[in-house]
Length: 92
Image (cartoon, rainbow, N blue to C red):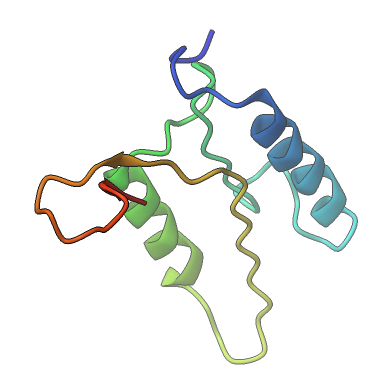
């Protein structure tokens, strides 16, 4: 299950709840109406490549008057500032 470090169950729950909620507005869960990227070991992982590919999928066939929906559920993080341009010593 999941990748361990950095895995946030609350974010997974938020994304799944949102997926169910928007299904009530016609965004079908099956049949290609929705995509969900999670680092849970079961879904497509939210890698940079998969995020870009999914964004292209989202807008690929869009027509005037279409409704598109994008939801992000996650948390930011900090890493050491290696360039020395941050007073705090961390990049966000």
